[in-house]
Image (cartoon, rainbow, N blue to C red; front, side, top):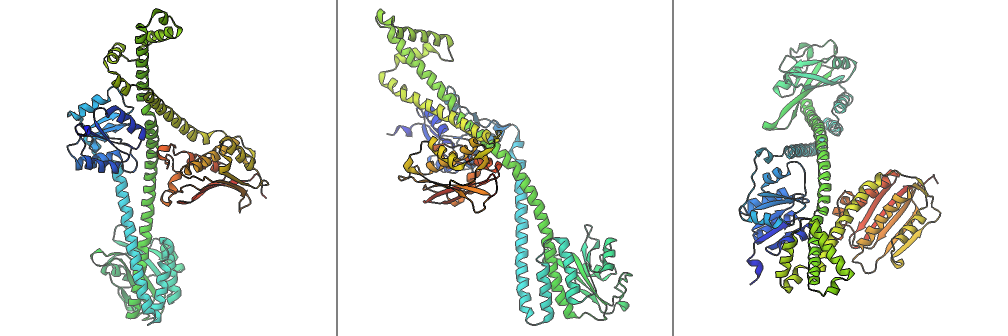
Length: 639
C-alpha cells in the first residue's frame, strides 16, 4: 500500500521553486506533499486531490493568493487554507483572513516550529478576523467603478457610431432623389467628424449659412437648471454680440426656440412680423422667416433634449415643410455629434482619473513585487543555514564520540585536539543547539537511518540554496543601482568594446560571428555601464540558445539609416519570444527564464542606461528562429 495514501495531504501553492523545495523537505517525512506553481493550477490541484490543508503564497502572479483562498473556500469550505508569505505590509494578516484564509504564517519559515504550526492547523486551530472593514477594498471598488464607467461610455460611443452609420446610409439613399437632401448630407458629414464641442458648434452655424444661404444661424444648449436655453454658437457680428452678452431664452416661453425645446418638435414662422411666437430681437432686424429645430439624442423613453438650432432668413415664407423635415435630419445628426463630443470629454476625464489610479496601483504593485521577490529569494536562507549548522554539529559530535574510544596516542594527535577544541567551543557557544539531545539522538539511531538523514549531499544542497539566493539578491542590487551611478562620459569605440566584452565572457569562438564596420564614429558613453548593457544582451542571447545544439551568436555594428546614430545588432538563433510577451520583457521583475534564474531587471536596466545616453533599444523576434536586439546610440559628432 502506498504510504502517501495514509498521510495527511498538504498542498503548497507558490511561484518560487526554492520555497516549495524548502517546505517539501520540512514536511515530506510526515505528510504527503503536493505543489503548484500558480493560483489557477493550485485550484485545479485542490479540487483533484482534496488535500487536508492548503498553504498559499499571497503574492502570486496573475491570480493572487487572496483570490485563490476565496475560490478554494467556495469549492472546499472545510479545507483549512493558510497564508504563507514574506509580505510584511501593514494589515497583511487581516487582508489574508478577510479573503478566506484560516491562518497566517510569515516567511522566512522557522524550521524548528513550522511542522508544529502545521499540526496545530490540521488539528483544528483557526484564526479569526476581528475587524470586518477589511472585507472591502476601497481601491479595488473605485477602479472597478471607473472601469465600468469607461465601458459604459465606450458602449455609448459605439452605439452612436452605429447610429451615425445608419444615418449616413439613409442620407446616401435620399441624395439620389433631392438636391436639398444632398446638401444636408454634406452638412452632416462635416459636423459629425468634429469631436471638440466648441469647434463643432462654430462649424455648424457656418455651414448652415454658407450652404443654405441663411443670413443668421444660432445654436442654443439647455443649461444645467433645465429652465433656460443659452446661445452657444452664432454666425455674424450681431450674433457675436448676443453670445458675448450671454443671450438666453426661457424654455416653454414665447420664443420659437423655447417652444421647440419644450414641445420637442420643429417649428417655423413663415411670416415673422405677423407671428406672435417670434420674439423680436433688435440685433436681428432683417429677419422675416425663422425655423427652430430641437436637438434630441436617443429615441423612445431614452430620448433627451439638449438644445435647439435656429435659422433665420431675410425672405418671407423662406421655409417649407420639406425644408423642416430635411433640416430636422441635420439637427438629429448635430445632436448626436454634440452628444459624442460631450461623451468624449467625459471619457477623457474618466480615462485620466483611471490612468492616475492605475499608475498609483502599478507603483504599489511594483513595490510589492520587489519586496515579494527579495523575500522569496531570502526566505530559504535561514532554514538552509540552520540545517547546515545542525548537520555540521552532528558530524563533529560523531567524530568526538569516536575519539573518546580511541587509544591515548590518537587522542594526542593535532587533528584530534582540534576536533575536541571545536566541540568545546560549540558547547560554549550553544547557538540554540541542545548538544546532549543531539548526542543521544545520534547514539540511538541505526546506521541506515543516520545515512538517510545525515549526508554531505544534503549539506551541499543547502549551501547551494544559500549561494543562489545571495547571488540573485546581489544581481538585483546591481541592476537597480547600476544605471543610477554617476557617469564618466568619454568617446567609446563600439567595435573595440564589443570585442573585449565577448572575450571577457569566455564565449567559444565558433559560437560568435562579428561584422564590425571599423570606421563607425565613436559614441559618447561611460564604458562600464555600456559594457554591462551588451553583457546582458549577449548573456540573454546565449541563454535563449541553451537547447540549441548549433549555437550562432551574430554581432553587427554599423552606421544607422540616420547617420547621427550607430546601431548594434545582437542576434541569436534561439527559441524566440512569443508575440504576446514581447512588450512584457521590458517590465521590471518579469523574466522568461523560470528556474534558470534571472531577476527580470536586466533589460529594464539596459533601457534606462541607453535612454540616458540619448539612444534606444528595439527587439524583433520570430518563435523558433531567433531574436535580434538593436541598440541605437548617438555618435559624438554628425557625419
